[in-house]
Amino acid sequence: MEQSKIQIIASTTFGLEAVVKRECQALGFQNIHTYDGKVEFEGSEKDIVKANLWLRCAGRVWVKMGSFTAVTFTELFDQTKALPWGDWIPVDGKFTVVGKSVKSTLFSVSDCQAIVKKAIVEKLKEKYHVDWFDETGANYTVQVSILKDVVTLSIDTSGSGLHMRGYRANALDAPLKETLASALIQLSYWKKDRVLLDPFCGSGTIPIEAAMIARNIAPGLNRSFACEKWERIGQQLWKDARKAAYQAIDYDYTPTLYGSDIDANAIDLAKENAEKAGVDDCITFTVQPVEELKLPCRYGILITNPPYGERLGDLRLVEDMYRALGRIMREDMTWSTYLMTSMEHFESLFGRKADKKRKLFNGRIKTDYYQYEGPRPPKENQ
Ligand SMILES: C[S@@+](CC[C@H](N)C(=O)[O-])C[C@H]1O[C@@H](n2cnc3c(N)ncnc32)[C@H](O)[C@@H]1O
Image (cartoon, rainbow, N blue to C red; front, side):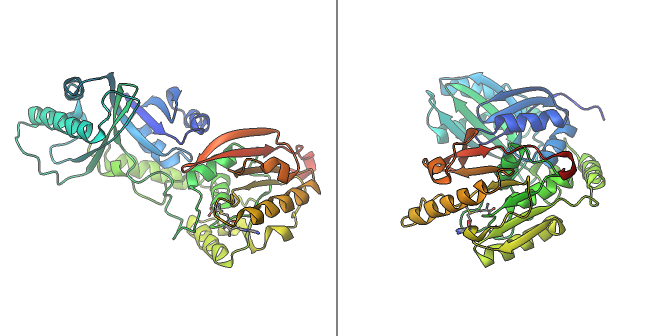
């Protein structure tokens, strides 16, 4: 079947646009453009499948239906109705409209959602020559997103967010999203032949994501997606893409990865998760307080998301932990350290100014990603 040109959006957390752009380039997508919170590119139905299956750091993948300026409900209705909804939504399609509006004249999100829904229904009535839709078929979640009076309409191809990889059982208290964990790794100098250590590993997300990168395991291989049931995409594209992804896994490669945590329950969970992800043989998990951490080799890379001390009473403990980690890392300056925290005076506790800092959001929490780059290993250590 001939593949058509589709505008595709990969949504991202603020701060991760460049990482997702790099991923899109690596996957061979065309005409890539970056905006706040999203990366847009042009592709085919096959690329929608590929993006869902392989993007490690994006939030969701959307089909962009159109974009226009609207400051009245009539403008919103007319321009929404003008778009080719029937190209995607079949007569039995079940569609809901979600929305957001920022700094715009049309600020009532619920009214905008209702108008967009009505406009789509009117358009589909004309196409299918019916008055009533049962909505018993596949799901099509339409998003109306308005920013400074510019409306963007898109359909969610992913379903649940792409961080849902299918390997993480019940989350712990402060779980790190898999997409963000993968981004922390991709923002570092870690490569699959370097040792990686997370001394606050919790449920193991950072080492597990690193192992999946090292083994070239597609992050979406263990889950389903909204557009798997879409007529326009078809089952065959999914079958082919999954088959190719299975064939691409490098089970023979075993990276050296470490995860430790003070909480024995967290380590049990991390082991279970690693097993589900098919990478348990790549990671050594240990119950250990960071104060007793021994670096397992030289020239390693520490990537971590420690507690931030935001809970009442935790601040002192967390400050002491950061001091202890700083002391340990200063004993071997061949290591690189990458640490995300919201604590603004982190550098003074750690005892060194970071080589680089990057603003990232962990959920709603504003953090900095502190980056201390050690030397490259001599050839024989690589
Ligand atoms: C923000 S969570 C990390 C979440 C983790 N990235 C994940 O994927 O689930 C911080 C972790 O630090 C651990 N922790 C707290 N104090 C510690 C200490 N003194 N030594 C080592 N780990 C500690 C907690 O048990 C918790 O799992």
